[in-house]
Amino acid sequence: MARHIIYPARRAVEHAVSRPGTHPTRLFAVLWPLWQVEVTADLYEEQAYEVIDRYLVRAVAEGGIGTATELSAFFGLDLSLVERCLHFLVVIGHVRVDGGHVTLTELGTRSHHEGVRYALRKESRRRLLFERFTGRPLPRSHYDGSISVLDTPTVRKEDVSDGTLFRPLFAPAAFHEGLVLDLAARPDRAAYNLPVRLREIRDLRPQEAYLPSYIIETGGGELLGYTAAGGERDAFLEEVLASVPQARARVEAETRPDERRLWEEWLSDSGFGHGSLRRGPHGGWRAVLPARAFGRDGKLPLRRVGSYQLRRNHFLQLWCQDERLRRRAACERALGMARQREVRTRADLGRRMDALAAQLEIGALTVATLRDHAREHGLHERLAHLDALE
Image (cartoon, rainbow, N blue to C red; front, side, top):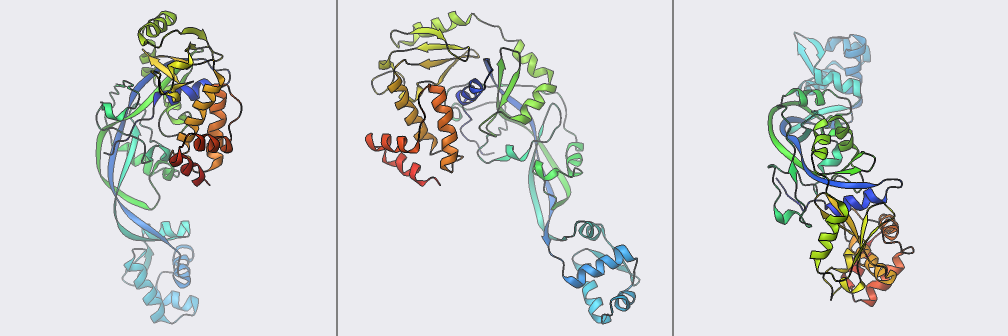
């Protein structure tokens, strides 16, 4: 199973904090239990009906005309032409001829109802994902190739860029084939990675899997869900959170340390020099550090200005009062965003720059601002990525 760098916890915190009226307090990194099921199915190709074939099928289905001779007389067509067309429809599995009587097969009936000629193309394998607590299928957004779905309840150090520790949740429910059969019967199955063109589903091969996820608790007791399935909250995960008491129990089982003492100890051990704790506008803690703590000569890279430090399920914002430094940090981070796979246009980048400017409490950023910064600091490769955006 392909593995990728796991969606970083800091990005989830940054988005949660940016929500108006929200006071995020704690983050829990969990491995959400899934069933990953590999299935075999027949893949049918959608084709346009030939004119004569379409009318022959309609006459059998709607008119009750049941022999080649009757079809020939009804349409005024040469009998040999009708027989050739029926032979073709038999070959592709749309009709059967038994003792001269013509009837539609299941495939022919479905093709007639949907107005599309389905033709068997090949056998296909498909991967399906189901949430293990509720048995709900995961939407297509969770099948993106960049999302890590793990086959064991462990996370390798090299897969986590920020050292986050994930804990697996345990779901006792056993797999049963009804999960797949129920999905196959749904009219919206394509939204869950099972296209209508796949039929005769068989040979189910289930195995346990885990989705790296973040649960963020707010001051009001709300649970927000984040995964790599999108840059914002995961609506699917939040719906599941609302119906799975084990998630709430996982959050409430954690002890709540004295936050001020927690961060005072961290600040004392950090070696960043003089720093102080303050409450930020989002209601959480900020560590206000001198400008010398950041950048080439500091202990923290410039991009960490305004970002979040995690400790024992809590987080605080790393801050500097120097607005010019914060603006430089914003330019560095925005140029990095321009290289992300999901950022394809300047409009995509613009939305992220607006959020970043608000997070670092600076004036608006523009593409021109980034271009000037890249030129000034010799960031030619990043400038090329910026100019390549549509």
